[in-house]
Amino acid sequence: MKPILQNLVEMTGQRDHLRLEVSVLSTLQKLSNIVEVRALELFLLDGVMHLRPRTWKNAQEWASTDADPGQDPQRQPLENVPELHACIQRRESYVIATPRRGRHVLWLPVWMHDKVGTCLEISQKRPFSAHRLEVITGIFNVYQNYQSLLDYSERDALTDLYNRKTFDEQFSRQAYSNAPICNDDLPDGQTAAQQWLAVIDIDHFKQVNDRFGHLYGDEVLILVANVLRSSFRTQDRIFRFGGEEFVVLLRSVQLDEARNAFNRFREKVQEYPFPQVGQVTVSVGFVNATQGSPVEILGQADQALYYAKEHGRNQVCFYEDLIASGDLVTQVAHDDVEFF
Image (cartoon, rainbow, N blue to C red; front, side, top):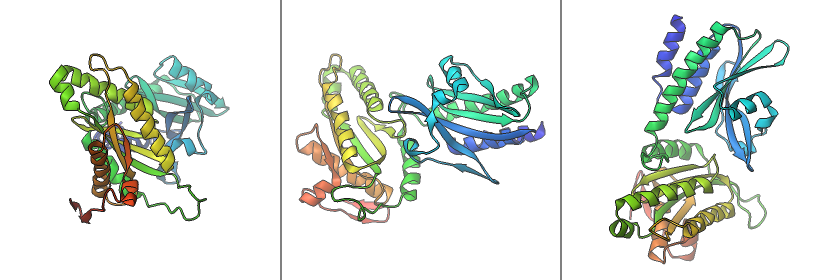
């Protein structure tokens, strides 16, 4: 029991979701007779729920992937695992199956915000005894509770989107791990799938607060956040920066796809019937998120946004288009400070 308690202490000392996930898998792996433990990611693809391995033991080391799940060759429809599929549909806390002789599998869905995005999978050669199940679910409940606490600290209280602190941590990690992608070998007019960062601002939001009051202003923020969620994929990341400003990290798409995605979102907001307030519009500035330091990338997206707001609002502007047309000039940057 002592090693398990030591692992629980280590697990609750983590401040990062991935490290916490590896820590709980490592704790479960140390139980006797365990053959394999994995964390599975569940995600929607073309309206169908899929799953794929996200974290697993590779030889003597833990491996994990944050690549686009839609391109993962190991992905499969959730219905291919009928026991787990039924477990989630019935909102059960766990399910056990025996896919073949000498292989017993326990699945533990992680419920967050009334949804399942992760599931722990534990395999062993023998059937799960009542005592073994009690130990595993006890460890899992500690993990899930702590996962909820971490998630709460990363969220904006009003919109439930990720907050600015979470953006700083995630984007810095992503920006320094992404190398620019060369388009030289692609057909003319086609660009490689890359990462894109958009800064979004609600037009004339101060007038909404001044005219209708902050209660309706808050409602507008919540409804825009809902439109953001419905406009982008589960593998994309959406943040509220504060006030009426939002940021979207769009993953693994080409430039035209990114432009179309941001314009579709802008049109959805324009067409949305906001109670009492009526029509609301947004301005968007976006940039390639793999070329430059985090502060440079964010500054360029901000420049594109300000251009959109100063030239009519309710539009999407791409930073490199503005540079190419001469509407913006490249700013001088030095280390982590930009001079405007």
